[in-house]
Every structure is written in C-alpha cells, then in structure tokens.
Length: 179
Image (cartoon, rainbow, N blue to C red; front, top):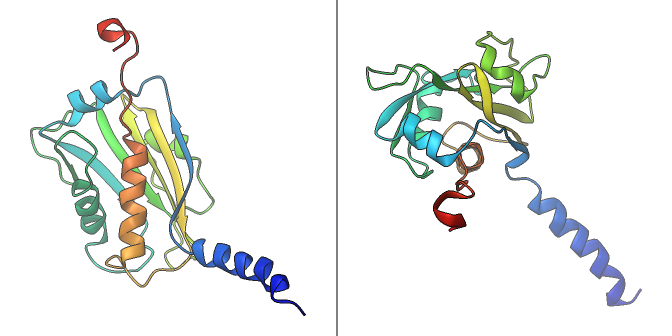
C-alpha cells in the first residue's frame, strides 16, 4: 500500500477529532433583534436569565452559567443573573434550557414554561432565546458531546459561543446614511 492511501484516512480522523468540541447548530435573529435594542435593554443593567436543567447535577449550576455569560464580551456591560435587581428591564429576559425532554424549539422559550429536562443526557443539548415582551428576538441551539463539569473548558466555550451568537452585533441599516 502506498503512503498516499493513508491521506484520506488521516484527513477523516482529523475531521472527527475536530468535531468533539462545542457546536452551535442553529442561530436565528428575528426582526425584533437589534444591537441598539439589546444595548437599551441591558447596558449597565441586570438581565433576567432563567436556566433550566443541570447536565452535571452540581449545585450553583445556574450561577456558573450566568457568570460565564456575564464574562463574555457582547458589547453592552450586561449582568446576566437569575436574581435581577431594580436595574433590570422586565420586558427583556434570556431563557436557557439544557437537555429538554422532549426537545424544545428555541423559539418557544419565551413563553415562561417550565421544561422537563434530562440531567445526565449526552450529548449536552442547550437551547437559548433572548426575549422581548414575551417574543423571541434571537434564538440559539447547540450541543457538546462530552464534558466533565461546568468548569470544563469545552463547556465554558459552549456557553461563550452561545452568548456571542445570541447577541451578535447587528448595525441598523439606513442610519447615518448607511454608514
């Protein structure tokens, strides 16, 4: 067998190894979403964030998730929190659900339902939505094949990527002559 026959197998192995990290598989923006709207809702404020499900069974999991989200740069200085203070604008919130059973569409997360979740399910499947007046402005779905806990770098990357996709910079077109 010539060495050239190993190249396709080696390339396939590299592709498989590269697929073990977190993946965002769906990211959608509704007409309600704009960076200006997000900034008005969250800059210098608490942003109420509900976290349902706990794929690791660890205490304080929802706080870990919101801390990772808060530490992820998305523009406005936002404090994602499950216990918002008086700075929070009640018309806006974020809903995050891990391993919903049955699976839930991220667009249905703004109705404030309590979802049934499967704690130990792998891969970890997460769905999130940024909600404006009870309707989704943006929605994201992602997964992570394996993770050892909420402090695992792969899990942290999943939450960071989810946050960035949930709150992308989207300039207003036509403002300032299209600049």
